Image (cartoon, rainbow, N blue to C red; front, side, top):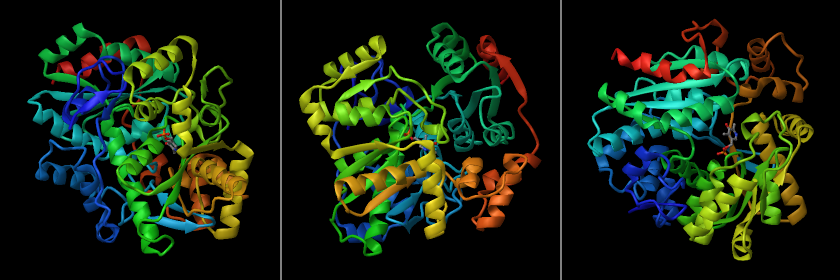
Length: 492
Ligand SMILES: *Cc1c(COP(=O)(O)O)cnc(C)c1O
């Protein structure tokens, strides 16, 4: 099977080539030319473990991987790396089923994909005859940096270089990155903001001379952001998994439809749910939930994507985003027209907005969308905890709150699966205040106090974080990023 660019002009690639390349040469994103189909024998699928199901779902996408390679990747990703035995527990609380995607090493859902992607990348590299060490560059505003450091931790043939804005990530996130233990971890804070780091990183990745220079010392660069198709496909698995668990519990019959609600930012997670649907998962509605940065809500309701608006820093910060990169993939799948997508993205780059044509707007009808503000988030966490004894984080609360409103307004009571994207401990200050817990001196004390009150286990990745040894303590100017990379690897 081939992967093609959403913008229609770059050459088609195999999956291993697409994973290595990341972004297509015409600026588009790689998408599968067709969707592999699930065996709809739901009863048989429901007997599989998470890893077995992952193999079943992913083999159609990773069609040039051998059986052994698939096993190697999936075992490496999900054996003993998640603190829940079933990898993704599905918990019924209130009006919905929550797929807890946060039991991985960094306590947020990005671990689901970033545990597997390093294996997909290294196998792809060997397959394409690449002998070099792959250096993954990551600029991060918080969650992705640590998930990449953990996912690639000591994976042979890889090195990870993370740049984060100095003083602009949460204390927990900063401590996680500064104490990263992998022998292949290289972490720097940058005097500047996230955009400075990201822009400089893009320049480095496009610097041909530098690439040649590093090539001579056995280095090849790659990136691990969610535009890489290798980040997207691992996420399909848990939607099928969640469906099967709802079936097992008798909430739905085999083949019956569900709704899926996803707290969305860059649109990667909900797009993976859509891929599951295209593979045969019976879904009636996708409910796209936003915080006050509601560019996606407005888009699904009007067909106009418009980034000219105020940007808010909210208590669900991983969704504070105005340009949702993966929406491009959905629009391609709905229109099938690369030239049209290139025009839309050109309009977005130049003018900051676009409007889709009527057929595309109509095809978007399987999506509903809504948003919730910070007060609604706090209220939702408090209510769900008080009434159901179930604790959720701020991002998941956006989803639940939007789902409640959707259900009331539409009268649609189809059983709903919600993507629960982070441990409540990760956003401990907001969660504590929502359930009326007194404020402690810092986030580390707050984690202990939340644990005492609720009895919910502290993820080991967040435990005793303030007692760990600081390993990475170098702050640099953004102009130094390239030299730092050179220094890190010249000696090897
Ligand atoms: C990244 C993230 C999201 C948003 O996911 P997208 O795939 O970018 O839409 C939601 N919640 C949490 C906790 C995240 O880290």
